[in-house]
Amino acid sequence: MQQLKPILRSLLVLLGLSMLLQANVHAETQGQQPQTVRFYAWGGSAEVNTYIQWAKKELAQTHAIELQHVKVADISEAVALLLASEENQTSAIDLLWINGENFAALKNANKLVGDLPAKVPNANQLREDLQWQIDFGTPVEGYELPWGIAQLQLILRNDLLGEQQAVLSPQEFYQLARLHPGRFSYPKPPSFHGTSWLKALAFQLIGDTELLLEPAEPATATRILQPLWRYLDQLHPHLWRTGEEFPISAGRQRQLYNQGVLDNSITFNPNEVRALQLQQKLAPDARSVSLGNRALTNFHYLAIPTASQRQEAALRVINFLLSPDAQREKAQPQGWADPSVVRLTDTTSLLVASHPEPHVSWNEILEQAWLARYQR
Image 1 (spheres, rainbow, N blue to C red):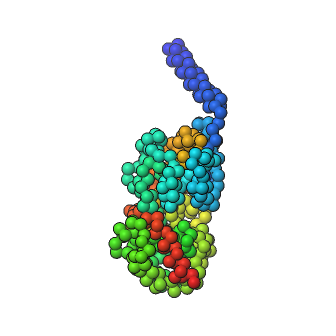
Image 2 (image 1 turned 90 degrees about the horizontal axis):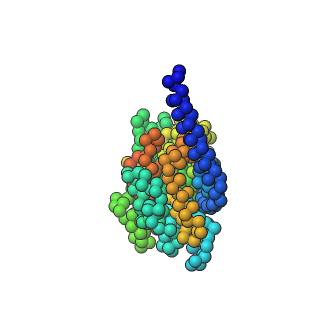
Image 3 (image 1 turned 45 degrees about the horizontal axis):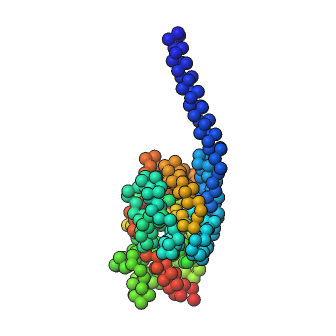
């Protein structure tokens, strides 16, 4: 017992030092003046909003940063404000959740802070297997960093698929629609998922897919897209309401699926089926498959406007959001279930082989042509 006393005294001393250090860190953090970072991000998902509130709490406790989630229906609202601002005019927007045509517009207008990989230490933890350096045909070149992964997958009732089936070709989808008339559909373009469905089909049906990676030329686009329109002309008569009406969004189509009206839905989150079933928001007989051997894949990013006066604090927010802890929390199936972009050993996602988004210029051409052809 006498021999144990020096050891116990040493342990108590170490414990006291540890508590003192923790108290000092807490006191330093509490003594700092909190810096506000206004994060403009889509606010249309309860799961996403809950995750951002979790990040807000963590940043306040550990980084003395007050993260304000400015919820927007579409990030283009914030982009329009930045594009309209004059040179050297400061902005209330400190951080953006962005990709695609919105990123291209701000990058081309020199409205974004560059060299982010060198300014964000956790950028060195990004997964090497992800091809995030091109955003809808626009080179990223350090003006944004990936935050999460989106990959188009179809949702179907399990009994319509083979036991191990992970891929459904456009031809197989057509055959299912023909055998089960009125039970299949897709979201109406130009909703995000509706346009994504058109792009995914185009990649599967057009012979020279490299053409889709180049800027669209109106003079040749009609010819290039002919296989897509021929396919949809044949498919539509077999769809819900004979292809004369479409669900207004992926969320609406999921409701119709859960109500037993439709046998399919669509998602741009490869983990969503598992997550929604755990949350009891999706019928248990649902399963996801890829449309073709390679799935339409893109990334959503974080970027900082040059007009922000809080760039250093915004960089610290990005660094936190790219930390393993923050990415692990974001990937939890009970919450957002957004796949991690950093290396994690204890979190899995259901990604399949991928192909990139077409050049951003194809979006408007596809949407306008679809509306002119099918919504007269």
